Image 1 (cartoon, rainbow, N blue to C red):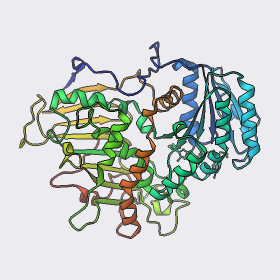
Image 2 (image 1 turned 45 degrees about the vertical axis):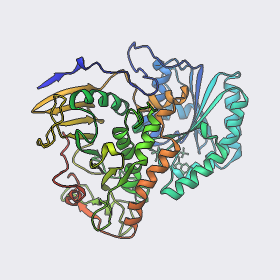
Image 3 (image 1 turned 30 degrees about the vertical axis):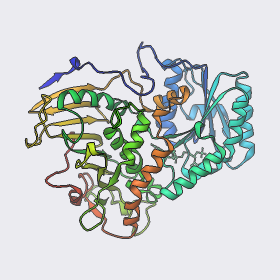
Image 4 (image 1 turned 90 degrees about the vertical axis):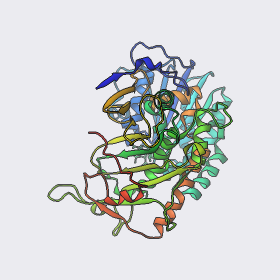
Length: 489
Ligand SMILES: NC(=O)c1ccc[n+]([C@@H]2O[C@H](COP(=O)([O-])OP(=O)(O)OC[C@H]3O[C@@H](n4cnc5c(N)ncnc54)[C@H](OP(=O)(O)O)[C@@H]3O)[C@@H](O)[C@H]2O)c1
């Protein structure tokens, strides 16, 4: 049975502009005169699938950000008309499109960008976003040259932001070094790190979940929660990118950023222990500071890694046989961890986090397993069975499953902007809460660092059948009688 929970009086979405997307809904974000996005890596996969559609949406009237101009940057010299056609941007949309080609280590490239910025719009009032969407090896050369461009943008009375895609570093040391390097050229207040999971509408609605669940199940903390399970599962393999993936693996690619951000979003309390309301980024950072990978009695970490095997008789190859992957690779395509928080409000509540490629279903799922019943009373000792279930991928929803009934706590709000639209909008209006701050990024590396080092030192890599839920050994991270859930189809 599905019960509408509209009577639960959903509160306002607390962080940033509750940006409206689609239809006639009036945008509530502050107006901005104009936006120019200088997009490095404009010919790439991320640009094609996410960034260009989001900019098109923004330009076509999503918010009072107008006009919106794209200055794409790539290493090849391409006539702008050819670029527009290749990128599918030669329609009648409102997005203004330009293109600059040139090497990222070549000062002439940045001089060409500067001239285009001057020529496009004399006068001030504009926000210029430099968006770095290239593979990480190009980051340093680009940011070294962006410092002068930012000076120029500011000197012309415009605002400047620099957005950098993940991965930011490959471990704690390299992330610190990269941050030091980047902030030598880029002002900290103008630097925004992108983790698009934080911009997903359902993650932005997790605050709503907390308030609603307080009414239904008592406080969302150790008094009512038995454990939390987060699953970020893909059905695809490395998709022709074995050379890139083999240097990264699931722990760095997904757990360090998206996975830990989801943990922080669930655990971050609305108020700190002194009862003061704090901002969402502050609470996320605090949650991360209190989070660590749990250890087993033998001192090793409660962490399991795996690699997908072949599907016999099908075209699906084992990870180890994918092109670009090193002989004898030990890179994990699956990782499962048990984390714990030192926050007294979450004492004794394990947080299980897993991710993998070639799993049974593509899902992003948060399951908060409750101790008590649905009537608001906490009943220790009662059989665990009630669950708050947040689905972030595919068919998003926030539900409570209790005593055989399903309560829709919050369904996907179609008026909330999709992730990359929200990212561009937040960058334009200066809503920093949409982006992990530098402390969050470094702390996330600190959390996974001991596991990186332990795995470098050896230990098993379990092979799992493609299309399964990962290796059986993933169960070894569970405490007590807990078992991994089987997310819905
Ligand atoms: N793809 C995704 O779904 C996704 C999701 C989250 C984060 N990211 C991150 O976003 C960034 C871009 O991802 P992507 O998948 O779009 O990358 P990509 O397709 O491999 O590369 C983007 C563009 O960068 C240029 N490029 C490639 N190799 C380069 C190199 N060694 N040096 C300088 N430029 C190079 C190429 O453009 P030109 O040849 O035209 O210069 C390429 O079209 C990466 O940091 C990635 O980790 C991607």
